[in-house]
Image 1: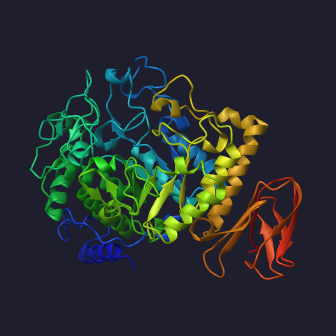
Image 2: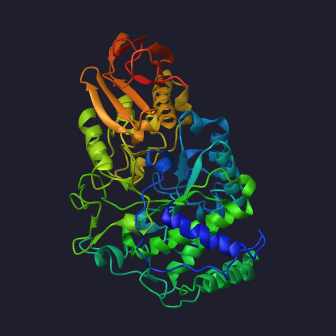
Image 3: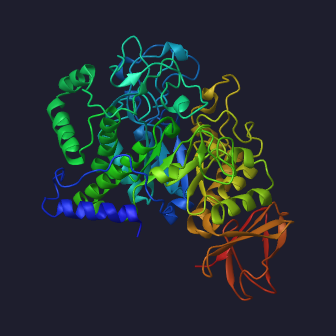
Length: 565
């Protein structure tokens, strides 16, 4: 059993033994601060999961009535205003089976907490459409929906077997605007700006001149901002919020420092709704010890939710955290120390897996995707099976919301892009629109070029349907066969390129890519004995192994083989 999971199971059992299921046992458990945890290895589910990531505002508008919440009527710069995507839009797509047809295991959307209300002029008349400019960590932004809709989304996803990851921030608040007050000096710093050349040059600094940096190094008791207290008072929840904070700090014995307030606010979403995990934003810009605290408190909160909602519990996996560490990647990518999984700040190296992270976003995949299939797959097999990332998780992607150099930016090779992402060892992140070849903007040159709204009307074209169908077939095959993302890789034939992935004697797959249409003979080496009945999941044809090979006749160039069930 995972040691961290066991630790929290014991804590929660002891805490609940004298409490009703409707109470928070705040007096009986405590959180240890700043502890580096012993790495225990990622849960098998997350090792090869398919995660669908969406910029919530740009995905699907399910409730147009909330589009101008908080009086956000000002004209914005190009691609920097709110486009209306919301939680109801995601619920609608869950109900339609959109994610299920793609073989998605988990969905992750940009932060939903309440954002600054006004525009930041320094970014070119920009509203916080992206969700990364928090104003109040305890409320859902009205433009994105309501707490009830967030709860409903998680429930509907759970019914479909889909996990939900919330995107969380501790590093910074939203910018200061004409109407959005700066947090007090005890909470944030405005200078210096980050220099990126050392640990302090990444952590004890602001990412830019108008993005207040939370003083995450502080352990000083710090009063809450007056504007926040006034806001809660106006909303009729001041007494409740203060009582919950008192109980939290009494139980954990953590100082009332800014970082610990935010830990409490973030893990409340887990306690209330049973969130499965966090995607951690700007992880390298915060002292790593706080991520261990966040993980511990999130696990505690998840166990409490399970105890209070036994009828909704669908699995007993530990709480999951995946971190964004800019320039971390496989095989010594950029700032990753070669031959290790350490991030190198220049004067200090940090293994974020030792600080609560089960997985890290693999920013090297975009570069590695330019390799041939065999070079790519073999590299990732070595790194994950026998290299420095053995037992750890990585999340590969080809496009993201802020990587300025996506793979295939012209969307000229949608089928090859899908093959490289969905068939590589490790976990895969589909960024909204990858599966329909959503274009990357040619006008804006900033990160906004990566954030065009999802064009649902494009699904009416035959070409887009063919691309989507390819992603769906790969996604479903990946979801049904753990060997694809977690098994040992072996090339069987160079042309057509054919490989096997073997997890154990019972879990094996063979894939052939870019074969000729028509009749295809696929050599299987000794993966399965003669007489084994297989199903090609791409053409949905049955076949039988004879003389160490199978024959498939189809119009497709892709073959996805596994034993019939």
